[in-house]
Length: 251
Image 1: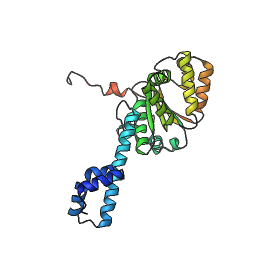
Image 2 (image 1 turned 90 degrees about the vertical axis):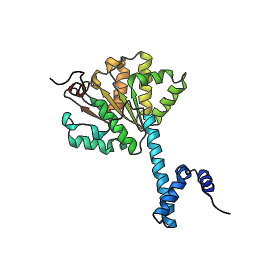
Image 3 (image 1 turned 180 degrees about the vertical axis):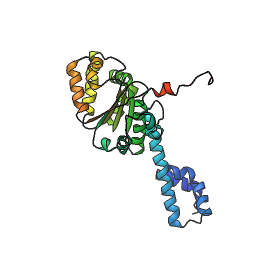
Image 4 (image 1 turned 60 degrees about the horizontal axis):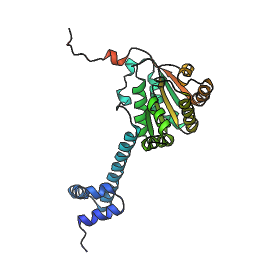
């Protein structure tokens, strides 16, 4: 029986080798042009499949993370944020804190790079094989309140509970009602010990009672977040104001 490209495609599909099934003609052409041995051809097919699966994994995890923009650590300008040393930056990049279950609290005024740094760390973590979810505090509270009624909220909340790193942006953005505070505590309690959290805020943990309202709940939340936590203060001028665009030319 003569083996055809169509037969090979079908066999690769059965084995769930999607890349090989879709690109077998190009793979064979490349192998012939480079005089691959049988062993080299098999290795090439497997290498291409592994690369394609890794690319698909990254695309899926980045989509699920729901970053508001794509900001890498390479784009973070340490010269403009000198309150964070190069040594500290590299230690954050190593992700040993994530492996050890530590939380990170990034404090500072608007525009100093808190969100950029959190996104950059999140993208880097995904590249290293971790699952990450990014959420503004208002979105997170909405998912918690509507998880029993809205399927999309339940799906997103399930991803939060299964992720390795949760990034909560702008924690002082909105005040919580009693029910919301309770739901937020229940979430933090479930994540405690199994998921690392990055929080960005323009106020320190001692002021979070203004947001959460109930002092007992605030204390319980802080107890779980701060137990294993690094608090990083970022300072300086707003990057957005320093690099603002203008409709007028330079004078």
